[in-house]
Length: 67
Image (cartoon, rainbow, N blue to C red; front, side):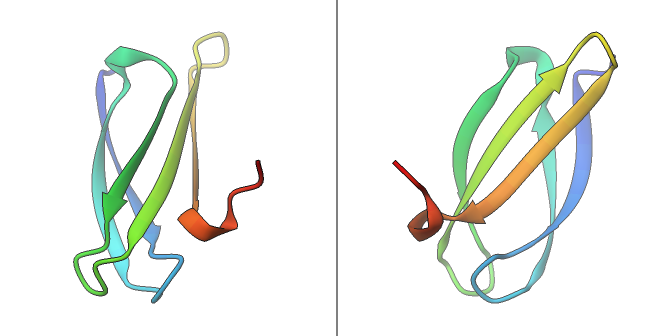
């Protein structure tokens, strides 16, 4: 599996389309990135399934988190 992949996402706040590069060498990850259009934080949850060689990316606004 390649260590880097590029994905297109929509900002959950304003709908702006964003291209992000994901580094899968670190395994499953949870991180934040700012939207270049509205500057709000975007919560990204990266899950790697090595058995099926798939990458799952879950995108939401920080205020949508359930604790």
